[in-house]
Amino acid sequence: MPDYDYDLFVIGVGSGGVRAARMSAQYGARVATAEDRYMGGTCVNVGCIPKKLFVYAAHFAEEYHHAEGFGWGPAAPAFDWQVLLKNKNKEIKRLNGIYQGLLDQAGVTHFDGRARIVDPHHVSVNEQLVSTGKILIATGSWPSVPDFPGCEHVITSNEAFFLQTLPKRSLVVGGGYIGVEFAGIFKGLGVDSHLSYRGSLFLRNFDQDVRQAVRDELHKKGVQLHFNSLVEKIKKHGDDDLIVHFADGSQMETDLVLYATGRHPSVNDIGLENVDVACRSNGAIIVDDEFRTSESSIFALGDVIDKIQLTPVAIAEAMVFASTQFNDEPRLMDYDGIATAVFCQPNIGTVGLTQAQAEESYEEIEVFRSTFRPMKHTLSGSDEKSLMKIIVDKATDKIVGVHMVGSEAGEIIQGIAIAYKAGVTKAIFDSTIGIHPTAAEEFVTMLKPVS
Ligand code: NDP
Image (cartoon, rainbow, N blue to C red; front, side):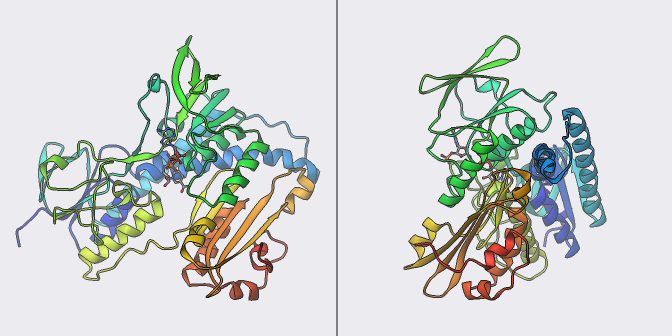
């Protein structure tokens, strides 16, 4: 066995990279990591964490308003973007330190610099050549912006977290996770918020009822939705104004255009040309069940393999990788029943199949659906509605999909996801006593299927 400097060299210290490095080190491997951007990757710095903080900030706007129905107020709150930014940056700095601490405690050597693969067992970082038994590519993904006239005037979620000033008017392009989340954040913070989506209804891979419910709720909250809307070009007018020209000939004047049109695997400038690592046409690294690439000493996981771009998935993949490679306990990643939430307002929480997918997969399904006004809004004055939906395989009574749009949907669906993984049946839902009065009890009291 050749004597390498390290057993494992991890490129990228995002969610997947840090977990893989820590676990591998705990199993006894000698591990090094390298990163030339920020500790904790997208999730901590320009993704899940600051986004959720912004969602909380945005939500207060309506909370102040809702409180009046309960006897508070009238409140006249003033929002200060600089305070939010400063506090958010402080929290992210704290988390960066925690991630660094986790690596240090695990005995991982961290290189602050860009690592490039030189050959299957060598990486260069900070002009140093390091030898390693295995290399793990955990470089994540980067926002994709299509090339069109004026695309240089747009920003992505990366920049949205550091805006010097909050715009008065915004246009978000894209109808996926980031698009609906940011359209809601801007609206909540008082921005005249527009969302443009190229198709007839956004959130393409979600259940149809969920998509419609989110459309209706965002519309009620005042987010201006533009469907079948294609940006053709963007021109700058004066110092600040942007004029967006759409394919149908219409125009919009705005202060900020945020493109949320997907993310591509980050594979540039990491030395892939020096090794035999096969990639898909979008750059995603192809791996087998062990996360091994076509170069046997090189592995990849997380967003860079473009399987499911979610932080907890990258973390789970990292645990499988470390256990298989360094703990002599081969494991396989289970991609079934991965619950997910979209933090638009109200939230989406979902696990399992959509109704359309279930119809394809099972001979006969039953659908249970409830749309209701949450109790809180009987006094708040809000006309926000919640949606809950359960999809059942009629032959086995097994629940194959659960969906929610409503306050704290992410929190509620997390619990239901555990039952889903355990193979829960509708009969078990029905035999569960609800917690009263909660919104979640609705999930165990839906007795009659819709036609
Ligand atoms: P998504 O893939 O979720 O959505 C991309 C959107 O952009 C789709 O509506 C797509 O339309 C549209 N689009 C793609 N290309 C173009 C184009 N050339 N012109 C116009 N529209 C286009 O990507 P996001 O950027 O929103 O998020 C990236 C990923 O990050 C998500 O898929 C998710 O996995 C992850 N994420 C998770 C979050 C969470 O867990 N809460 C939060 C944020 C991100 P169409 O549907 O027609 O293809």
